[in-house]
Amino acid sequence: FTIGHAWMTEFGNPEKEEEWKWLKEYSPLHNIPKSGPYPATLLLTGDHDDRVVPLHSLKFIATLQHRLGTSNPNPLLIRIDTKSGHGCGKPTAKRLQETADCYAFMLRRWARNGAFS
Image (cartoon, rainbow, N blue to C red):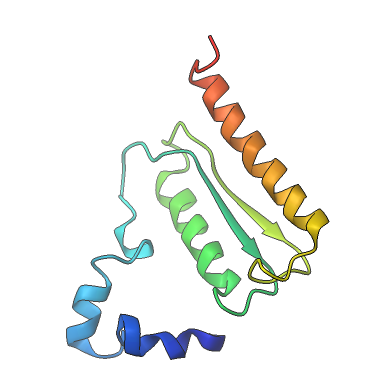
């Protein structure tokens, strides 16, 4: 997956059994609970991100929704920015749109939880 192979010296190689054992201990995907409430989640990705391939975010949110979607009272969402990559190269307008969506998500959750009562 693009540049991910360069991270193996720092994080470990999942193809080596010994390294895989400790890698999966902190892997978000491999530690999704099978039941119970999960906090409101909004993942952010860009469809042209070559550092964190969008596939990882898509697989994570799909697994969350599959395992917890019908029983979880909180939203499990993903925001996929089109024609953008890993953040720093985003035009100002895209950064503002993303920030506004994040604030709207947080404010809605706080409002539903009575934070403004």
